[in-house]
Amino acid sequence: MNKRPSKRDLRDQLNQEVDDFLRQGGEVKEVACGETGLQNGRYNDHSLAFDKPKEERTPLSDVLKTIDQRREAGRKHSKPAAEKKNRRPRKKVIYDDFGEPLRIIWEE
Image (cartoon, rainbow, N blue to C red):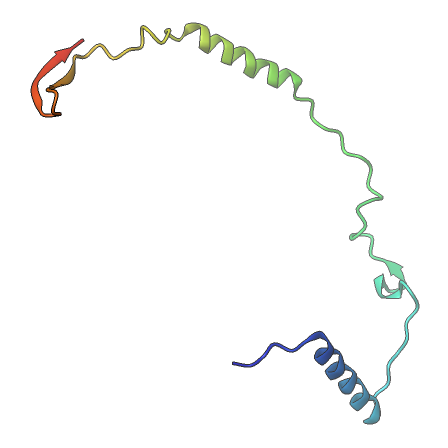
């Protein structure tokens, strides 16, 4: 398994490639600071988001108030927990002192 190259190895490799490029007749163009962000001598207007006017937000206080009122109305109409109990009989197993089941009874 090959060892991952260190930062120093990568830096040395890049410097070697640049030196080889320059020795073969290549040249590096220098550009002014910020020039790379220009398109046809102007800044790209579509990439700047700060010059747009602030958008108005939709007020939601009325909507939230309506939702809260519906929630409260639903709570008032719901039955209390005691009335919601399942009215079907339930099976209950009676055990002896040793944990063996003796009989089954039905409770309401």
